[in-house]
Image 1 (cartoon, rainbow, N blue to C red):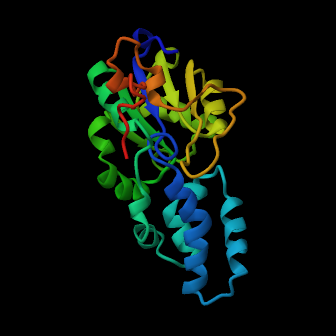
Image 2 (tube, one colour; image 1 turned 180 degrees about the vertical axis):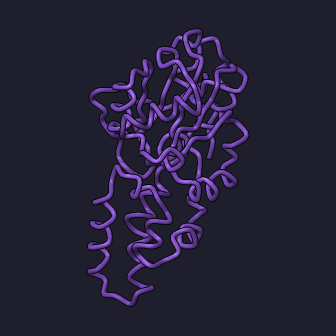
Amino acid sequence: MIDWRAIDTVLLDMDGTLLDLHFDSHFWLEHLPRRYVELHRLDEASQEQIRARILRERGTLNWYSLAYWSRELGVDIVALKREIQHLIGLRSDALDFLKWLRKAHPRVVLATNADRESLELKLPLTGLEGYLDAIVSSADLGVPKEAQEFWFALQEVEPFDPTRTLFIDDNSDVLESAREYGIRHLLGIKQPDSTRPEKELEEFIALDRFATILPEELPSEVRGDTGPHGEKGGEIG
């Protein structure tokens, strides 16, 4: 699927791509509305109003900003996230993929909409930082990945050749934006949240496992292929 000889740069999303989206889905749609109601002594019906208020910001910088939501809702978002931080974890064979990338030597850049407060929470718990050459947050650039301006700004701080770049993200709107900018190799994620059904991405190929895009000559335990007795290698968590 991927000719790795044609790839100089790998841009990777974080939440829903390298990390299981379950933590974020549960936090924003369940944990935060429930704790907001408890902290402000409101009735249970207010939870749905909070969910709707959060969803209205989808695709904007506010949607991804912990400082914005702390200010808007009058709660400590980071503290509330730490209450369920045990749910933060890598997707399937993400760690095996990152280890292989380190050996293969393309430049690996985390291109994320997560703000710096989110990164400060998740990076130490997942160990991602040790496998990345650079980390760029949309909060640093002042525009989300859904917007064309993000890619022009990314090019300024982390130069890359779009025709020799692979970008993997679970968000179809972001993938469409990257395609419009000219990034040639684009892949989605079939099941960003391990607790929810798989997604259909009509415009993009969606990965089930990263192993499916690794070179065929790799040992089966690295690729995660089924062995002679039906076992699988390369599973994480």
